[in-house]
Image (cartoon, rainbow over all chains, first blue to last red; front, side, top):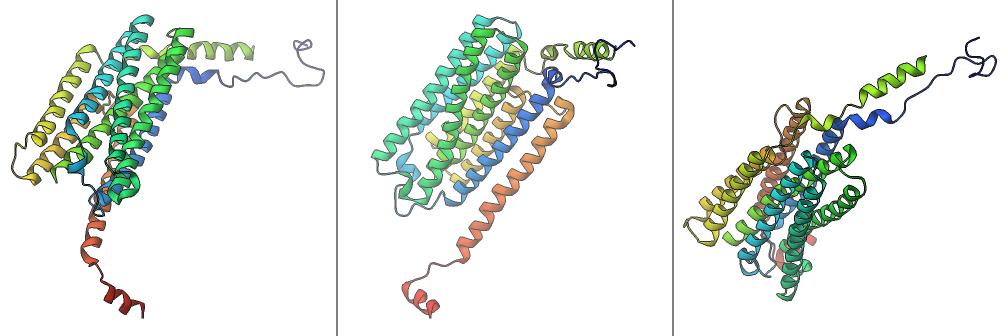
Length: 210
Length: 131
């Protein structure tokens, strides 16, 4: 009798399902999931490092790391990435205080440092091509370009993601969803800096030492 | 009536979890940054300045410093601890490190021995083997 106006005659009482609203508060599981993605990305880099470790001394009578690498340039590159890490940290601190404008400024600074890093890396590659060291010259150079440009591609994608998030924050402000996205990008960005530590140690510094 | 119960549950679920922390303070970021700068400058200085004569020792030192700097990044920038996400991120990290060590050490070790045992063949040997 009670359900006469909500259900057709003979039907059971209506049941309502809450489908996708629950996802919003489970920020923890997003962070864990994103962490698992980073760990799988870490395995990709590990295979590339292993490849470089095996092939990195096979010069095929071509140029060696000592002749090719310009350590002061790599030091500048490293500084760019390290600065971008700390400025992203500042963006996160401003995000915690819900200050949209300051967050945007620090994100922009982070993006500029990232762009400087990518630009310097492209310049280095162009220089290497002119020196007669393209990827097909030797196994060392093939594995070198694969490892370093995979990292550079990650940074480029991170910059793209950063720009998208800056537009999002500009449009919708620091809502819960945008904070979650910024935290994911924060992990991604710091993770790339971590990988770069391995790159400059194993590829550049150890390469020049030989 | 049952709809009311579901709504109440949904409303309860929407407590903002973003204030739970999980990322660091200004001090922790600066600590991480200063440590990173030190741990970056030392290996560059060791290699560019040719400080140690022995290149094997230099290699081991810069590898160790790189490892320490990675730990610094994980703690101060990625804010990992053994307790975050109920310990699951730490478990995933340990699992990944195990795989990475097996992959890196195994690859280099196996391929080194392979190179060592495969003596370069000259044309005469190739012809003999082909026969």
